[in-house]
Image (tube, rainbow, N blue to C red; front, side, top):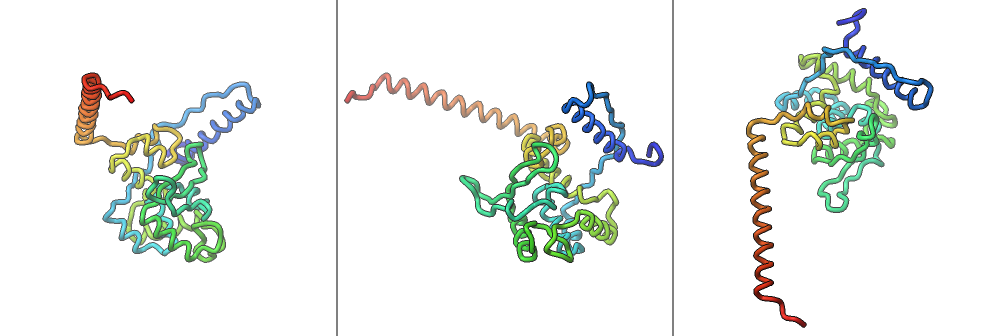
Length: 255
């Protein structure tokens, strides 16, 4: 705790907002230069990951509207504001082109990278089907008591906190943990940092790299893949040379 009881993370959020405002002021030529605004070090980051063995217990206690929200967050890694803003016009259940799955279009809430398309898993499609049966407006996720209005993030958050208390889970398990869990699972599945950045809509690859933890096995497999690629390239070159020799030795008849 620092400065009148405020957490470092809270202070850093305000400092980041100030830095952004100053940069915009410079861009709009309101100020001549942007002073340096340094964030505080030692900020505690929420690193809670929902273990798969706890997932079913969590969903069993969740009311339906929270369960659908949480499942969709775990299947897509979307931010809370992105989930709230998701509309039926953004849902495309039929594959396009050579794609094998439908997708949703995320309008984006932060950087230019936050605007993206996400493939729909079978679980995500089931959530959409359940929501389609109750939603009475253009939004996918709606209020618990009024299905004609978009969901309230604060209401979802309060419900999550009550479920967390019932299960005796740590306070570090917040709604954002669902997105963090998704990113962690992507990394465990072998997704590289650039892929994670595109899927999660990160502003830079630096944020995405925290989810990538190469093991000795994955690093060894990288060398194996490199070696196989080299062998394949060598085989292609030999085949090309063999074809050229064959054509020179046995020229095609002229028409």
